[in-house]
Image 1: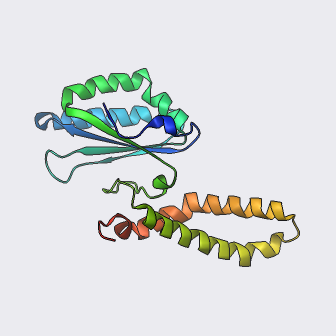
Image 2: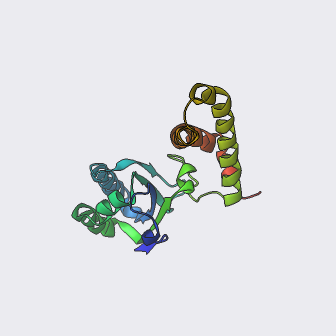
Length: 192
């Protein structure tokens, strides 16, 4: 099976996004979609599963994409090595052409994946750097003017620990999903 990312390099506690590309046999599309739906539902029962999106092709004969998110590589590997998934792989063999392609993303790349988005490759690193810098700079300014006056009585190390935790929390759950959506076209545009 086509594997495009070396999973051994990802720490077991790191959140991951998995992108699976499959091409159905033209006369088995309904069966393929049934298998894909069943696989997704079963994956959702596994610990650490954060959701899945199915992206249908825009052209006949093209790939379907399934995007899974897990809260850790450990939980993804539990799904990947499960008997449940193995049974689904046997069913896929009956309704697909060629081998699946799998890409496992971790780290900053996962901040730039949009649920249901068609562009699944991470954007160029220089574009990610610009968006992350703008976001962290803005949050740092906010922290400096609005939070630090209330925590200035704390030890410096405690202030830094608290503000950095809040920045990471906001970046992960609010700022980056919002920025990825706003700048999606620019981030994934082939031109600089």
